[in-house]
Length: 447
Image (cartoon, rainbow, N blue to C red; front, top):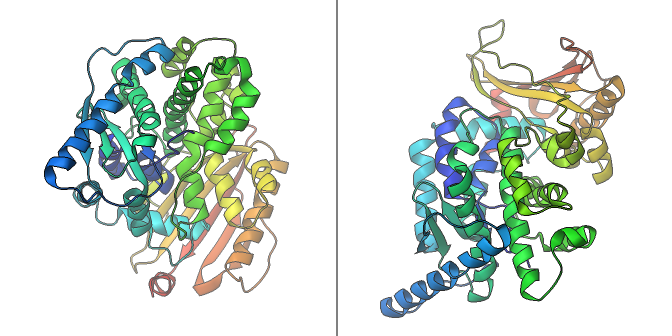
């Protein structure tokens, strides 16, 4: 069983939080927080005395580090240096996460992210976004690798039964770091959210496959590439995580993307080859979740999208306090959250040709969310708008129904959504969406 669908990793947390000063959107923060980690079923805290506890910690590290040779055998490369092992309690991990957020995030960053995503309809209006992120972090983390310290950390509630799989996955990250320098490979100051998710899919996808490959070699099964379709079906059943019952579905989907999509993407690179073929992908990584979801687009090396440039303010001189690229996968998640069936959301998002979302703050404290989207064709734009606009009206109990581009819809709590055509760029079809979020709506959601 694959041990870890996409969860928080401090290796990504530290640079990501520094990068937040650039103003990035929700999914980017999630991809930063929920990565390079292992999750395990919830277990009770250990209650042994200090001596027994220290012995258990050492035993965990000994067992974990013994998996290094398995990673080397499957990947076909050697570690250039030993990996340090540490064991931390749930309290220590929770305190670390909170301290990072408090010390490195600008004070209003999580607030801005929440406003954007709630306005678009990604999360419920009354969701405590920061608490939800911390809750997922604190309840499910099983282990992580930190390139800053070059240490592999194990959560002290991790069972010995799950330790081997976690260790192989995390030690793969250590080998990736020694080989490709993960700190610079996932450059949060330079990359958009969509690019971060795409690169994390490569990082997590390879680690997931190596853990699966090691598991199968141990019982004498053929290499993964010899049974690609069967492996994909098996992996689909392995992707599960112990989310709490109140974790929004959209958050769950975003959190697991690098595993759900990353493994099939990397497997498409491996087909008929060895893990050495992945080296070239680290040299030319996918630049969007579109390329991860559609590996043929990556293999053909054809970029058919264009993300609008970021702006500074509008004609009222309202400053932009938050900006990022949403991307194809997050649009899938959004449309499903707005009520589209799974296959309809996939089809509607597939015509994505680029986007940029911005949050502007007015002098009276209200906000405007401007989402500039680009689509491959008029039909693709219309399909997206059908599910987005109808979903907005339905989810938010709109007071009136209007047609799409060029019209305005009055939403609940005095929110107003305007949909209009943007500036055309080449063959891409622009659709711009503006959602006004008044102070009254913010107060109602918080009450």
